[in-house]
Image 1: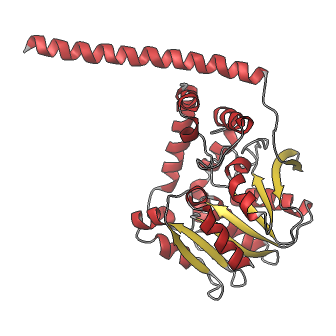
Image 2: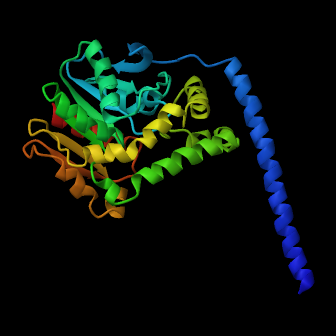
Image 3: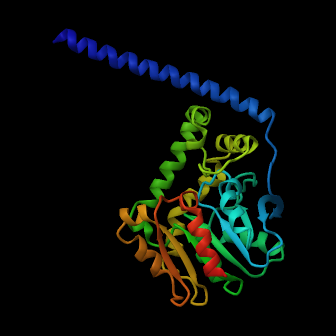
Length: 322
């Protein structure tokens, strides 16, 4: 028995030692690779720039010749909103002017020291749209971006013609799961994995599964390189972490908010989330006062419905917006 116990302890000891050595090697590799990347920093490869309070915000426009406008807001922590939503934006741009915004701290947009309160984020995003001279538009939001559409719709009700949700976050969903702690753990663990070089290894071994992009879309090699660069150098930055730190106050701020009665809402909700959370559909219906044109559609797929079934989204948007 003593011999067996000794063997087991030895196995655990050497396994632990091996893991530590590998982590040290991967961390050093990541630091050296990161320094090399910074010396040849990839410049912005897409979109246009807008000055927002002295900071550069990136936005992209497709279908600029069209009259009706859809403004896309990403979910929290999106590596590159422009590239993530490019496949969907291209499909929608056949009929609409589609503007994808990269909030400060996201993608190639500059970071900011301004607190990531609902008011600050919405003011920055709406300022970009106002500077473009667009006074009427639909908001399309994925995940946490939905929280900002509530403030936006209530503050600028005369501008928002409707809201389109792609499994977007809604008030009181934090009663279904500990939202703020999960966001905190997710963001900071990803930052740790990045520091240890594990994230970088993933971008080499299996880039499509590591990068936040549509697995069915044929991105160019340059776009994949851009996604890798942003994943390793932007994800979990100070501005994003501040947004996570504000999440509890943000959810409290919008807890009793509803969309104004004059603003219809088209909600696409994930079948997976509906199956996981009993009140997922109910909470999305509870924030809608306009019962005339508003609709809720359960779509088969994950939280990333714009990857899983973009055609259903586009077809319904064409019918709903007109």
